[in-house]
Amino acid sequence: MNAAIAISRRELTAYFSTPLAYVFIVIFLALAGATTFYFGGFFQRGQADLQAFFSFHPWLYLFLIPAVGMRLWAEERKSGTIELLMTLPVSTTEAVMGKFLAAWLFTGIALALTFPIWITVNNLGSPDNGVIFAGYVGSFFMAGAFLSIGSFVSALTRNQVIAFVITAAVCFLFMMSGLEPVQSAFRGWTAPFIVDLIASLSFLTHFDAITRGVFDLRDFVYLVSVIGVFLFANVVVVDLKKGS
Amino acid sequence: MSTMLQIKGLTKRFGQFVAVEDVSFSVNKGEVLGFLGPNGAGKSTTMKMVTGFLPPTSGTAVVCGQDVTRDAISVKRHVGYLPEGAPLYEDMTPAGLLAFVADVRKLASSERQTAIDNAVDKLQLDEVFNQQIGTLSKGFKRRVGLAQAILHDPDVLILDEPTDGLDPNQKHQVRALIGEMSKDKAIVISTHLLEEVDAVCSRAIVIARGKKVADGTPAELERRSAYFNAVSVRLPNEHVGSLEGALNGIDDVDRIEKGAVRGDIAHVVVVSKGESTIVETVNARLREKNIPVEQLYVERGRLDDVFRQITGGVEEVGK
Image: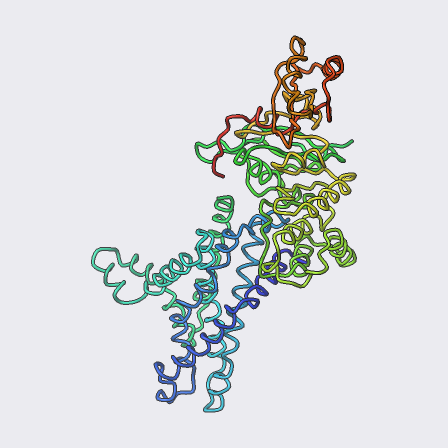
């Protein structure tokens, strides 16, 4: 068996061996439901789609995903098990990938457990299931992008609380870069293409497009690139800091 | 005898601080090398470099022909390692941990179960096999750490303080295990217990302030002790004075040290000059003067004394 898969399996088991997994899933499902029905006006909209459901995902991920990612490397360094792990015949890349995939799969499980809402909307009307499917895939990849940031930050510190806070802050910046307050802060004094560049880094811009059913490959390329860049940085940081 | 581990000019700097400086040695199959030194001398850092955890600043380690700076993964396949303090995933059971290590080490399914059974058997882990590691005693944790190190029957075993925190019975067991495995492996153990060097090591290396300061068999190291060939005498306390008088004027006697008095029996150590043998002369003089003696024996030299002597004055520095 591939070493990365073995590491993934161990990590995934580790999530479910502590209350973290269950707390996370219950809170994610409760908040996903609450935001959809109370703030999203799921019924009032009178439309058979899941816009109201997906549009809150970035905000839920903002503080839930850092909680999933914070332990990935910080805990290994704090308990010293990183020495056990990294003296097994695995490359740093395999270890980073294995851990990331476990955390991603875990959030995928939580996301998949929201399936009753998909059934509900199909009972109430006839939604475009292709758009909903794209929304799920988009949400899953956005969770992956948040997690790659979380995994990277977790490797920078041995303190999980610090990892949580910094990850949430970095993710918040990534989200906000597409919003008007940030845009107008740059608009006056920078070239328009820089404003566009900053906007193009926003999770919200790309994610909104996906959930509205505008399937543009560039949005997925963007999310996959974020994952790639942060996991690469993650590998570099683990190599640099594992001994300290 | 084939060389399984060769360390060449291994050096590690952390900024200005030199943790390990130009350390070279090799370990053959069948040898158990004791790696000694005060805390912070660079023992663990050396081991971390040999096992591919830390990259050396310069120099390298070659394990079974594989260079750790070129192909760390191949080196890791040949090495079983118990890190200092035996860090383990506390939320796992020994069963889960050994299965995980077997998976990562890609043991074939045919040998996987045998390897796990074998390690569990050797370290007597069956009673805690399905208990969470976090709830285990220090001794059991250490044994789980050892079990994962020997799981793949490695050619080279590197054990950082393998008996630390074990009770005397467990220490004895682990030492017996190391002795038993040493026939077809090269084993390096770090320790600051000198009795351990005596008990299991065929050779010892002492490092201090990151540098190798001694390399030899335990017996050779003992020779360096001021107490090598000294004569220990236990005799009634009131005769100590006449003993001193009797030994006066023997050229080879360097000094007489008076130790503790228990009951009315005193312990006196007659220290020889250099490596000269004085037991016969001392014995003859005592008989001549009719001094009653409870016990008289030749000291082999004290490793801890040698240890202090060659690493002397080294302050403990943080790791």
